[in-house]
Length: 308
Image 1 (cartoon, rainbow, N blue to C red):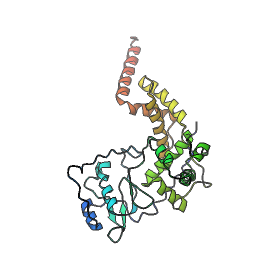
Image 2: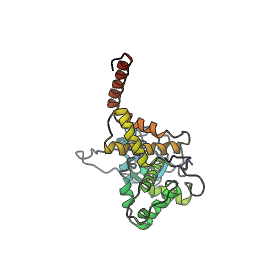
Image 3: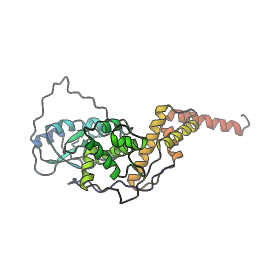
Image 4: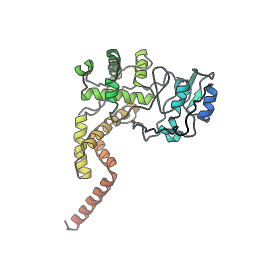
């Protein structure tokens, strides 16, 4: 069973960060007036926007996104309004502050939950943690060169571990499990630094994010097959039933993502596969777990008194 041995992800502070990550106390409307921008008039009947935040490896945590320098324009201001919809703890707070002179297309520091693209502007929500963005990001590239950039970036970050990209991946015709894990690793890594994978690729190519290629021993996470098998055993043991195909796949993905997170923290040892799978079963259906635990306790009690 492959396990990770060390951490390749670079923890160097964001090279474009020019200040602390604390959020300011001004409102978004006050900030836009400082920017010299004019807010577009919106029909009151249509201005209510529904944003369904994606589930990322940081969802449900108090993770603070790093400070990133952006070039504010009117489109960025409109997108910043979504910050408080993605993260309700930001309601009434500003996620931008001036890095120097104020005005359109001048540098600002952004600390919100959306990603910054390679042009220095707000892209949108982070990538999903459940693998649902893998195909869109890989097969959605426009050129073979862009596909090669994605593969090269994942390779330089050590996300293929001891393996290599498959021939299908290199040709753009398909993805193996290893390929998918590498792409998800790149998306997770990019989420962590608050940038799109293309922006991450540029930072890696420029040397602002250090490559692990040839410089360190890559870590490995448990294979999808092993994780799914462990989940199946855990469901029978904890919940007294088999997992659904969706539960089994989600458990495997979560176990792999948690291993990556532990590796990147450089402070935690890996959880055993059995323990990780058991935790997934408990957390997935807490009501069933409580009922099964109560049933087990009663069975043991009757057994002690000779009733069973």
